[in-house]
Length: 89
Image 1 (cartoon, one colour):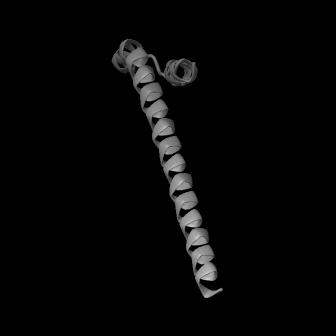
Image 2 (cartoon, helix red, strand yellow):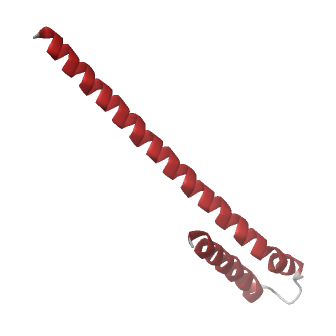
């Protein structure tokens, strides 16, 4: 669902830029670039959506790993202090 929404947003942005180029083009300017963008924009939008989805997934995994490492470190610190207190008594 997320990738489809990002693909649609990316496609709409690319089409908007192409429309802006058409609106501001003079009569003597060739439209080869716009034809190329028209053919490539669906692929470009799909690539942007896929890379955005992968970036989100990677960051979620890094966040989960950080939370796991922090919890493990904190629990080992608490366990060590509890053991040292029990030994001192």
